[in-house]
Structure formats: C-alpha cells, structure tokens
Picture 1 (cartoon, one colour):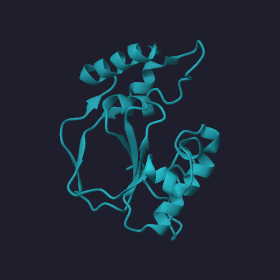
Picture 2 (cartoon, one colour; picture 1 turned 120 degrees about the vertical axis):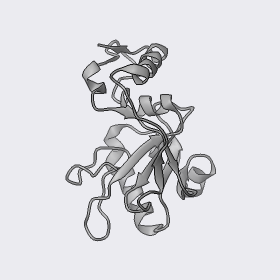
Picture 3 (cartoon, helix red, strand yellow; picture 1 turned 30 degrees about the horizontal axis):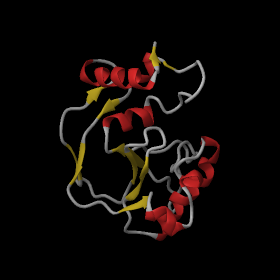
Picture 4 (cartoon, one colour; picture 1 turned 120 degrees about the horizontal axis):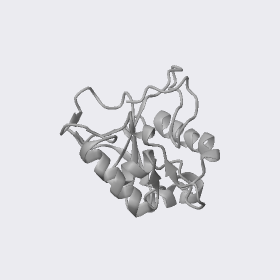
Length: 176
C-alpha cells in the first residue's frame, strides 16, 4: 500500500484522511498488464502532440506484481449502472483531467467514510479504456488477504521491460 504524501492529493482517488485524521494508504491496480502500464508509466504522456516520450529512468522503481485476493473484494463500481446510480458521468468522475483530482478524491473519501465495508473502487481505465483500474483502501483488507502470486517483474529490464516496450510501440510512445 502506498502510505501517502503528507495527505496531499496526488491521484484520482487519493489521498484523504480517515475520521481519525490519518492518511488512508491506497493500492492501485488493473485487470490487464497494459492497463497497469498505461496508468503508471504512460500516465503523464500527452495523448496528442509531438512530445510523447517516457524517460527510461521512470522505470527504475516500477514492477509488475500479480496479486490474488483470498476473498471476494467489495468494490464500488464506477462504470455502467454504477455511474448512473450515482447520477454522474465518467467525464465527471473517472475520465477527468488531473485538475479535477481534488473533487474526485472527495468522492473516494465519501465512499470510504460512508460505506465501511467497501474495500475500494473500480472503474474503466482512462489511460487504457479496455481495462479496469481499481484502488484498494488501506485498512480494509486484513494482512494476508492479498497474496503475491508470482515473482515481481521489474519494468527496467527482462520480461517487464519487454511488456513496456511492446505497449510503447502500440501506443506510439518513445522510451529514451
């Protein structure tokens, strides 16, 4: 779980404080490798324009890790009927620019506070819209309820790097 950065908003659904004033740690994930790469490595690469580059050093601290929950996760669905039930569109919550993160974090905080049995949120990835993205809230899963199912693949070299390079080619992104 990412422990936060002094409670500052830095992502679509993090960071916020629990009712006791502690920063809620989060874990982001995707149901597809390309979704995870797009949401992390390629997250800040413009969709349009000529500067569609990722510095190789960006890969240094990143790895692909496969996790399996030991129980069914309780996730708020922020797509399909879930969005309609909330009375919002993706363009208002899950398909927004970073300038809207203060507002989207407020949604996550409300879900966390009001739905005490919810483990996190799931939505259609903005960066790779054939994948789902999710965030799990720290403290909602007991230790051991998420198991690493294989060795992590560093993205700087080996099979992880091969996956990043393939995704970059398909997305028209250059890694330098």
